[in-house]
Length: 193
Image (cartoon, rainbow, N blue to C red; front, side, top):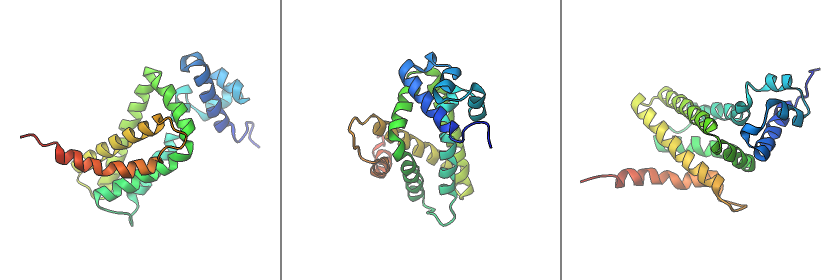
C-alpha cells in the first residue's frame, strides 16, 4: 500500500488552484498547498516538480491524445479535415473542465512567469504537432505552417470560450468548427494590390 493517498495528485491540484485564487500565485508556498491537500511536501514533490507544474500538468495528458488523433492511420489526410478532427477532439476533452480551466487561466494571466511558461509549452506543442504532421506525409514547411495556424485558431477560440461570462456558452468544439472556415476567408481576403 502506498504511503500517500492515491488521489493526492488531484487533491494537490485542487488545493493549489483554490489557494492561488485566494492568495495569488506568489503568496502560496508548496507547504501551503500540501497542508490544504492533507499531505506532506514530500508527497507534493512525488507528484509535481514545482508549483508551476501544478497549473500545467494536465497538458501532459492532452498532447499525447492530440498527437494520436493526428497519427491515426484511418483518419483524414486532407489538411482542413485533419485539423478539424484534431482540434475538435481536443476541445471535447477540455469541455468538462471549463470552470477549472477558467480559474487556471486567470492565475496564469496574473503572473508574467506563468505566461512565459504557457508560451514555452505552446511552442513545444507546436513543434510536436508539426513533427506528427510530417510523419503523416505533410511537407515539413507546410506542417509547420499548419501547426501554427491550428494552434493560433485553437488558442483564440479557447480564450474567448473561457472569457464568455454566460453559464452555458457555445461548446468549445462548436466554436472550433465555426471558426475553421475563417482561416480560408482570412487567407483569401489578405491580398494586397
